[in-house]
Length: 279
Image 1 (cartoon, helix red, strand yellow):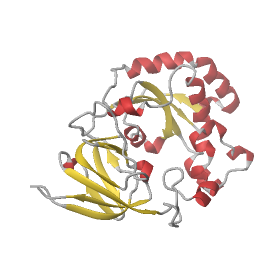
Image 2 (image 1 turned 180 degrees about the vertical axis):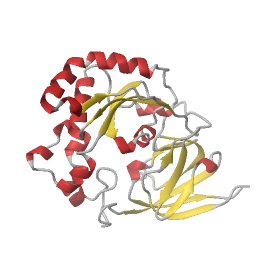
Image 3 (image 1 turned 45 degrees about the vertical axis):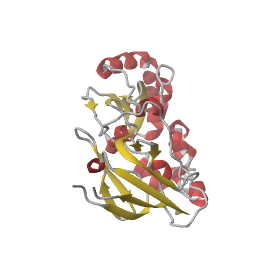
């Protein structure tokens, strides 16, 4: 017999831990709910109409960049355009919105990796965010390819790779479990050969040790999914404040319900009531 769940608070990004399968926790305010234990149960989500900025806590009519109010979106380094396009980093120009934040988050070692989420893709992340970043993207496998000195340099390498491989996940295919098998170690060697000249040019400018090819092992990931949706229908709390359905799986930052999927990260900062009735 399952326990009842009835919690109220703001949605936050779902914490997850690698395992077989990945273990997910739903963060609602100060409460933490073990989601894997709720598979097969009817869950209910009610949005009360209030959105609070995850940085300054002010009420906002609209969430920007997954949880921020507009003033914070405009002033925080975490919301600058270079976060989505790291090759546009302007720290070296002295115009970073928050230099101390940049030192901590951007001017540190990053990993350029290959992942299989809906097919082969390239991505970057802080070294400390492996494998969290891979799980958030719903990758079934990922492998480090290069370790680089900064986010800016990782972005330049990613740009070179994008001439040969995608840098986005087809989230609908990812949620259908429609993922081809790939030999990522082999793909890594192929990609390094394709961008060899680009890497040489970057090392000449930034230093030989600024970009290091690695021979690290990859990671295979499985997710707690009982039923893959044939068609992906999305729930949107901005349009429908009440969502309910049987929890059939969790992958990436999505809950997969028998009535549709909901991207929890998209609704970060939304005040909700999350309920599961005891069986």
